[in-house]
Amino acid sequence: MPEGDLNLNIKRGISLFLIVLTVTLFRAALQTFMPSSNINPLPPSAIVQSGLIPIGFMIFGLLTFGLLAIVFVIIQDGLPGARMKKGLTFGLLFGVMLAIYLLEPVPHIEGLPIFEVLAYPLADCITIVSLRLLLGRFVGTDSKSDEKVRISSSYEALLAVPVFFIAGRMLSYNVFHIYSSYAARQFETILWAAATGLWMGIMYLLLKPGIPDKPPLLSSPKANSPLLKGGIQPSTSLLLLVRQSY
Image (cartoon, rainbow, N blue to C red):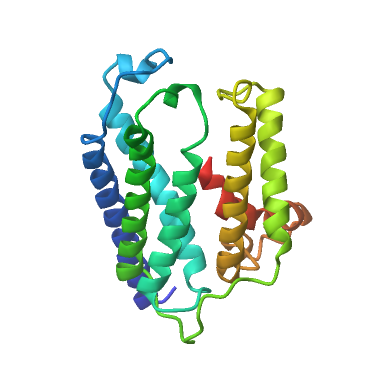
């Protein structure tokens, strides 16, 4: 690798880390303003009992925002528009995605004031938009073309993604019995799953132009294994745009 490219990659890596650290600290600061009515049916976790919440919060934030930053770096070159516009678009898509996801009907939000229910989704949405704007400003690049962001023609995703998401949630509720209010609020839960899946489909259509045909893992000459090509490559698009929502 030429020395100039190496220095550029090191500089970009340092910028990424500083941005992720800044956003994590920002989200931690917002946490101190979160309202709490102390209504929680769940017992305190081992992390809470041991007083390790600040450390756990920082580790979780660095990992989560770090992964989201990597996703942006991977796909932003293929997206049209100026770098700040890319960051804002990307941030709004993922911010709204997380906000919707956090509004799932679950027992511990029942009976809470509406402001408290919306506080966490709003804080996370603001944080992710801030992350994307910083990434757009300091890491993103302007596209050579002046094309506007266009929705991909693969409209099947608007149907396929919600269907698969709802099917997965139904499996989780009825077979694995995950924590939820599905038994008591089936209609609201299914409606939430449909809205979440639909937004995932919209995200996929808007960001699909930036998803590389060959993921970085497969760019190596050693990555010619049929298992890698047949197993990893088809799932990369889904992992990039859906996995971070879980």
